[in-house]
Image 1 (cartoon, one colour):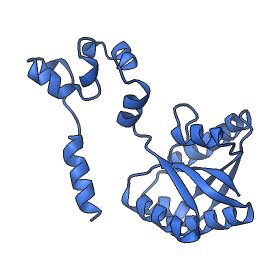
Image 2 (cartoon, one colour; image 1 turned 30 degrees about the horizontal axis):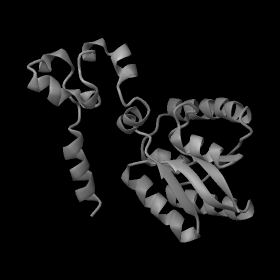
Image 3 (cartoon, helix red, strand yellow; image 1 turned 60 degrees about the horizontal axis):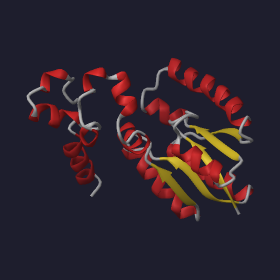
Image 4 (tube, one colour; image 1 turned 180 degrees about the horizontal axis):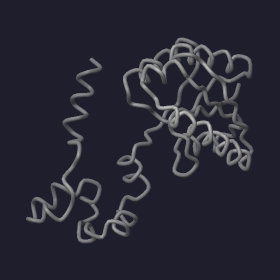
Length: 192
């Protein structure tokens, strides 16, 4: 059996943990499954659908340089997407699927269905805080482009707001848009 890289919303090559892992495991097949009816339900704009299509063409070319072939299939909804994925995997002898996590409700429900098809889903956190903590633990990149954080110690660089408030410089940086700890607890509560 073999593996498959499943592209969903995250269509980037650089700093893509699922792509890195899949490539290191010798995966040479990637898949994107459009869901036009699902997109309609979520009011996706025609220009966004066009952007996705154009980006997929670029992604196909980029992946070919790494010896990975991208296949683009279509399904109506996320439920249908799982069926299309399972059929593709069965016909290509695939038992492991690599993908970046998607945190939204419909996407989580879709991913739970994958296990019913005897597929092993290996998913990776790809949101920016996790990525910055993993790939820029000392905050060198952050300090280079956010010079207002130059004096923030490394242990506080990924969540500078509390530190800046403690030292009386809260106004030196934008206030947080989301309180991550509270938002996480609300999300966990929601999924119970």
